[in-house]
Length: 456
Ligand SMILES: *Cc1c(COP(=O)(O)O)cnc(C)c1O
Image (tube, protein in one colour):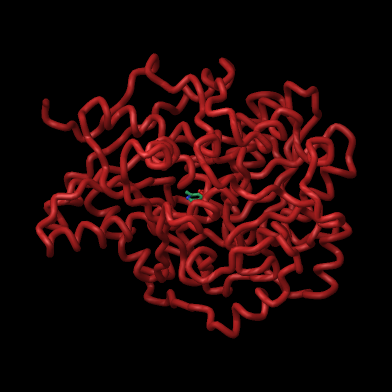
């Protein structure tokens, strides 16, 4: 076998032609979304009022293992894919570890993250259905940027509700979205009924993803020709993001590399679900074994401290109920939390896999995350997104354990994006003013006690 290059690129012709639907290989399927009024599983017709038809089909399909990627989406992917699989030689040297560290870098596009992989797919199906436009929420701004890029490419209208704290902290993100033609509204806003209600109850709120989702859904269902699209959490998003794992696995297979540990940050679970998809598939089919680790912020610890139960995906409680690890839909991370991954819940697919023992989860505090980000930036050259840096930290910790034990493990982690728009957070870290806040059990109990009572 030849020396492993710094970057393993696939050829364009080797790019995946189909997405992989992990659910097809799960024995315990993720629990269905429930209608909050009847507590019965959401039907395709009900979901069709909110989401595009083809995406509803993908959302509900637990059995078809592969979905062909339409040619137009593959052509768009070619603008920024295949993404490189990088051997972190410099980081290994810095850590003096016998471990071999690889990362799949998804930050090489203007949106700065993996979110474009699903944005183009969702916009494509909206266009194909003949819709005028789509609405969405964005937290840190990567999803809104990705969606506005995809909509601009396809000529769709794009309306983004941006969590107020990010809208204020990241004015430049907003301008990127506007350059791509999207309209951007800080959430909660006075433009929707649910926004006005939240503002009346909490006039000083800095917003949350759950609240921005409620607003975006309301606008989609009350305007003909519009549907709502979501950048994470949903099964369809994990399906589209499987392109990350399929490419990573193909690149590794080319050089006969088998990861022992696969690590990804987890907000709603889409990059992690995508990265692990083909590996988890092998694990579920009993063909191979991998340790799979989700990394989440200690200030928003859905997996490690949440409850596996049906909950709303949004603060306004107008969305279907999803069975997931959740902190409760009224949970809002502490205001000092700067590292992203702020969603209160988690993908139903990953929740089921975690519940069944197929993966692990750890939580980390943000000052450690930024320290890892700084080390990584200095040796590997890329300024990582704070979200991605959760995975960097966990991968570094694993490599340090290998140094102590002498094990030559192969570690693969997802480097989901770049941090150019997160410089307010980097400034806090550099100034030494960043702090950690870990919610107490009592804090969490407040929102968990408000979970809807569902006997399923
Ligand atoms: C959105 C985002 C995440 C977290 O979302 P998941 O759906 O959990 O993947 C992680 N990293 C970056 C750079 C992001 O933009």
